[in-house]
Amino acid sequence: MPFYSYRCDACQTLFETLVRGSDTPVCPSCGSVALTRQLSGTVAAGKSASLVQGARQMAAREGHFSNYSRSERPKR
Image 1 (cartoon, rainbow, N blue to C red):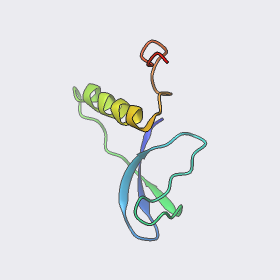
Image 2: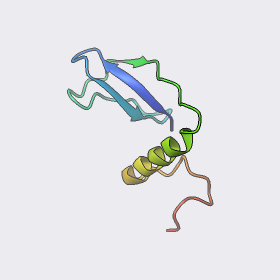
Image 3: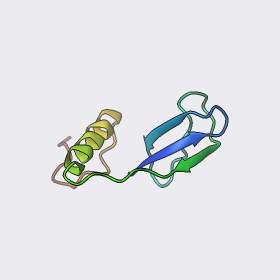
Image 4: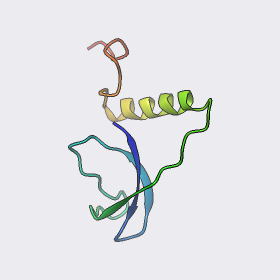
C-alpha cells in the first residue's frame, strides 16, 4: 500500500494516506471523495529506512499487514 498525498476539492485540505488499489480515499476533514492526487516529494538518501518503518508501524496500528513479507507478519 503506497502513501499518496491528496488535496480535497471541497475544503482544500491537504493530507497523506495509505491507499490500497481497490480503496477510494476520503477527506478526513469533510468526508468528500472529490480529491486531487498531488505530487509527493522524493525521499532523501539514507532516510528511507526510517520512513518505511514509520509507514509499517502506521499500517500495523490500522491492522494492515499486506505490505509486510510473510516472515515479518505477526503470528496469529
